[in-house]
Length: 108
DNA sequence: TTGTTGACTCTGA
DNA sequence: CTCAGAGCCAACA
Image 1 (cartoon, rainbow, N blue to C red):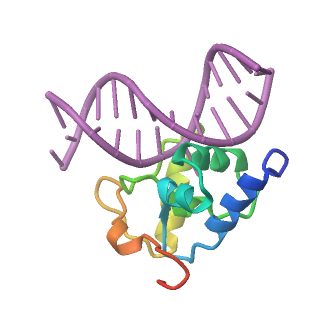
Image 2: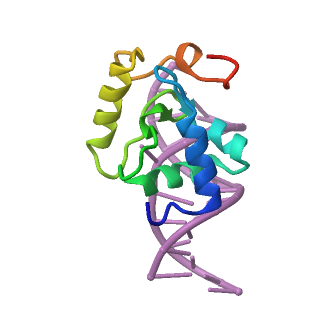
């Protein structure tokens, strides 16, 4: 945590940390919650670099697929972590948003 | 202060 | 349904 101390970043991390196990959220959804665009959310996730306790693996794109990180193997690790949490992946590595997307604390 | 870059999303074909 | 191009916001140099 060094460049992730911005108030907006902190808000994004708080929302991501609120995602329960076995559920996922999209960049656009989080962006709407914090008041910014999906690009900013993705930027905040990139700033984590695995140095934080934020469950970044539960954040995926609108297509229900993991984004191809600059690291390369990060998306594979993300899929493995989500499968461990009970998230079902499609043959193409896609997640059923209708089944796993989290709508809020009152949804489960 | 301006320009570039990035884990995205939308619209059109 | 999939593929491709343009737009948007925030951080960094």
